[in-house]
Amino acid sequence: MSTPRPMQSLPCDVKDLALAAEGRRRTEWAASEMPVIEQIRARFAKSKPLKGHRIAACLHVTSETANLAITLKAGGADLRLCASNPLSTQDDVAAHLVKDHGISVFAVHGADNKQYYRHINSTLDFGPTMTQDDGCDLVNTLHSKRRDLIPDIVGGTEETTTGVIRLRAMEKDGKLAFPVIAVNDADTKHLFDNRYGTGQSTIDGIIRATNLLLCGRTMVVAGYGWCGRGVAMRARGHGAHVIVTEIDPTKAIEAVMDGFQVMTMEKAAPLGDIFVTLTGNINVLDTVHFRKMKDGAVVCNSGHFDVEINIKALRKLARKSRTVRPEVVEHELSPTRRIRVISEGRLVNLSAAEGHPAAVMDMSFANQALAAEYIAKHSSKLENRVYVMPRDLDEKVAKLKLRTMGFSIDKLSEEQEKYLSSYDMGT
Ligand code: ADE
Image: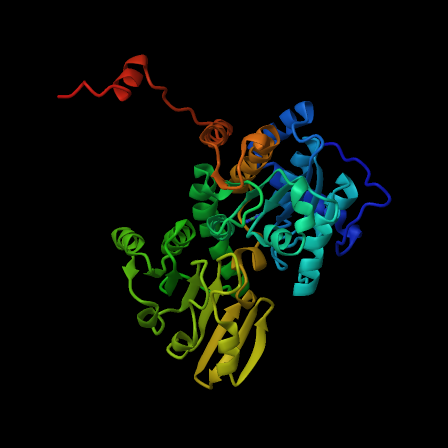
């Protein structure tokens, strides 16, 4: 991997450039689990498909994202990166990208709301031609406060379910001002990142934050989308009794048939030892639930925004609150009712752990890189809509990943292809 020297005047805001060496080790460790992105990087370095593009990226600043950023730069892009969540930034990785790759990064772990938006604005200041977002905060800022920059933007990508929901609402209202590819909707993204990535990293965050034994405990999983499915599956694997809560009848049936208990949150509240929200909606855990929870109940969130647990209401109910472990605040409602919140209700997998493992981000970020290349090639034909990831690119990621994992699969024979495209061959 080449390591160009940064320009003297590189605009950036990171915690400490002296952390770069550790960030480099971390990024290289992640790279060893990301063979698909490595292959794309090698191709990009030759063909420079992003030459002339300025990409404003708002993603979790992790070692996995660093490998995407290096790939986009290898493809010829001028790149600026800011954090999509103030608690997920790995300061050493941010320093590495600036110091060793000359990439403008605006991200500091623990940034407050003001600094978070200042970083988004700094990322936009160079007048991007493309966006990459995780949760839609950057695109939202563009549409609400930086509209002057929109004419130069030919397209964008969105990484997560919550962001795609926001973009589709903008599209429906006729407000979306450039095309966006919903990377989240690629099969090679949500079937793996959302399910296995969130499944493992959420449990990882809960364990790192609390060191609780999960077996024999009752875990309540709110939301049975791909992320909820993953968490429920892995919680069961740890020996927890899992209760699922849902608002969608079909998903609820699926949870029942997957062997989980399904009930309302009001019924689950007094039963749960650990609660995880992954719904994308607000106040999924609220006063009515806190009042019913057991003493010592642990609550956390693994949905994109910190809106799922009504922390304000919990603080109001509490007589006192204290930090009991680095990532855990205990709220005492009465001497016999204490509720423990991990990472202030922010994404537990990225705040209390390191996010999804690199092997799964390999596919997510391969989709991001290929989507950026697609936009660079086809932007003139795209409308101001939310597009699903082109099927052939999704399949390309699957093929590459499968090959790097050392598996091969069967091919349809000519006879089988014919059978599948016919309608006159019956019994
Ligand atoms: N989202 C979830 N896990 C992540 C990771 N490790 N890096 C970047 N974005 C993520």
